[in-house]
Image (cartoon, rainbow, N blue to C red):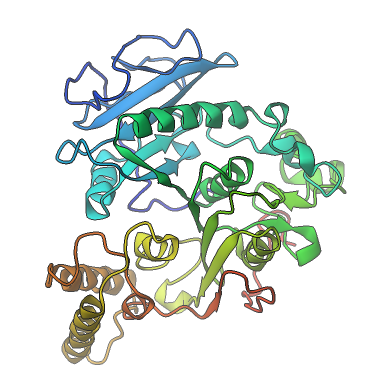
Length: 424
């Protein structure tokens, strides 16, 4: 489920060198090759295929290590302007980079706009290896978080050891650790939260929910839910006839109750052609397991190029609000922004012969720019990073359907879109 490029997941190739401006509060030892499982800050990128690319940008530190004879890595960002505050940490998995870096300018913008620390995760294979060869069911799901079920379990254990370093260094708030991903990276987020619920406060799930055969999900683009991963790798879409999986009932995991209940914010357009049928099942399964799931489904409009496998127009604003990463914006901020956006819409329609600001990608870019301008127009009422209220968010785009935490009878629906695996 590879998404179109978005503001948070663009790629940029960088070299690597020893930079004193990196996060010196963490382990600053260096190694030019990952010879063991201890993460070390790299000094230069290797030319080997799928080797870790190491950042030299100010505030960034790339750590790499050896795991099962694979080079694994992660990259932290601690804003040098605010190096000593314990702020929320947002972990950004991106398997599509194949151990390359995400766009540093976009990461810095996210971190500074919402007062965050970030940690980028990557995979050497271009995809996450989910538990039990994608064959999860009611009989075997108790093993889905065992180290033998997926090499990503050991990777996540190392990730959280690095989170602990950041907490000990005073740069991360231990109670505010989040995952945020889109598409397959969203699935990785719910996998991580299911297996490490005491370490994660909440997850942002864009463009995916959970596959559940009993709840009517269709097979996903790599035939998850219809075939095991190994059979798909061998047969591709022909696995539907060559090796159909009768016991692949859930993907990527079956959520389970835990003492560490986490929040999940599911965001999807009704015609998402990669995962639309996983939206309601995701809310249903997470709620049944006692987690705090909120589902927002947005109406698509193909004539306006609105919808499909994309995030909603305001993207991270929805996650910041739903997860409560930052304190909510004040009533004064809400009133100011709503009035400002109403004025923008009125002027926009007057200047564009009644055209709706959602009418095209270009119109929507102007709409988002207007919203950001409105947020910045009154900094005393709207401090940087405050979590927008529902009316503020709806001044840009109104969800077609919402299911709230604890709601056991989520009745949202999605469009009739065939599966990308065999056109089911």
